[in-house]
Image (tube, rainbow, N blue to C red; front, side, top):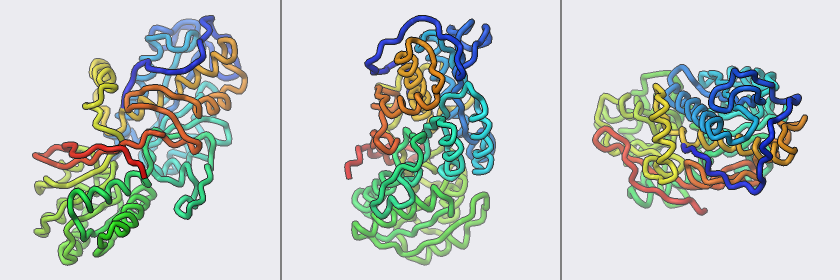
Length: 411
């Protein structure tokens, strides 16, 4: 979740004003930022849940991309180009995400899209973007199949869509990292696994389960909950009677917080652990019972402790956004900045103007982008996945999330 003009690209940008082309429209003084007035407008789309139970995360994504755009315009990052965002609300619903993708594709000024939050939503958007050669960079999707194909678990890796990229590490990394921490560091040997039956939650729980068993741990029971339901007492009772010394939950914070609350109300003194989907203050506030000791993994190192993020945090605060940047702010800024750098490279290679096939060229350039971002080094591998495999384990202490271990995953 960071920002600033820290690009490392080899090309030098021609400073002449861009000429109007098929992609990018002439903006007569309507642009935002210092670069407005007779320039070519490039739109960066944003898709996220801006309303509903996950809106805290979605608003952080939108605002962080907006900050990247403001920074690019202020610094005249791409001379002759004014960047804007078009933010659409998917409400964490796949069908809405697909409709939004179609709308963004239909806007010829959109040369890249940041989002969505949810892996299940992304599954319905990828094909739409691919058909239009429109690059998509998710700051939060973690399901491996989005970039490595449905048979990745069998060791068969095939990138489904060349237009798909992400700045977030996958669940392969996160699930294994969580299992290793719970088994080795926390000393838990008997876990009860629960998921919400969604693409993200079920996938993460499966990866965690395989690694926990490989390490020698025992899965003493499994169960599923339904999204948007609130009564998980039957699952909580099963956890209590199973003798589990811990619970792993694959899902999001609205259900995760209530599950933790109801497990503790049974008298079971066991920690609930989950992925980045529960790493939010709302997970803690959803529980009426004290849930100190609960755990979550999240991608990257704590933003507040990164030297590379200081400027981002300062600028975000100064911008006066109503909502916090939340868990994916830094990754969203870096996703937006990656698109900006790809546009910069494309313009530089085309004598200071956008080419007719700007979308295809931006997608190609994204695969070569490399810069020091808010979250660290930003670049992508052959699957469009981030090369940054840093993760952190957080623990609830005194009603707050406190980081307890950060490391780079190497296996």
